[in-house]
Length: 249
Image (cartoon, rainbow, N blue to C red):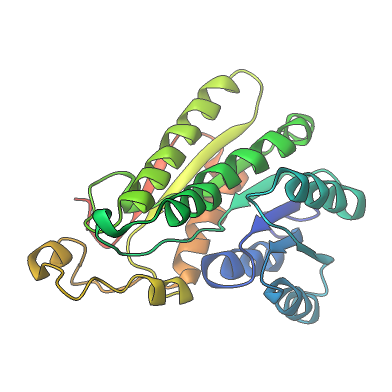
């Protein structure tokens, strides 16, 4: 018996990195998983999960920054799999850049994906989560709980995720829906290629984001998400759980 047997889970950013590992982990523990992504890679992971677990899995194209796209994706997931018990907001983007060089277009895009996306997903799935007494786990970052150089937009968006999580946890405290977030440090995922520091970056400032433990694996973060989302995490609500090798100590 798995912790998520016959439970429906929706995972954004499921095409790669933490999202991919999360979709795989939940399916291995019995969940029926809707894999949402905008890249097309959701089809590959859905096929892989289906072959490995014989579990029902669905690949859905979704732009988490689009209200219409999120509505359509959630509707498709519910129609095909049933109302969700677990929602994992993993889709995210970011980059290192001097604040004075940050374009408004890049700022808007980072905030839209990292913060507006989780808001839209929560808004569309809460009616179903009230029915299933489910929960939402969102991927924040150590950048959302401490300062980080060359990433003002990323820090602002992840800080917003932290407070969005706490606000929703408070609002639905009496109605049986839990909201929590994980705050990873460095994770070995494809998004790392976007975090190339400026050529004149301060090594001392960059070292503030390093730990002797190195990078986490996506599977390690997925394991934490699975625990929080399961009944074993029943008493967790409004929690922001760091998994960062000690960066935020």
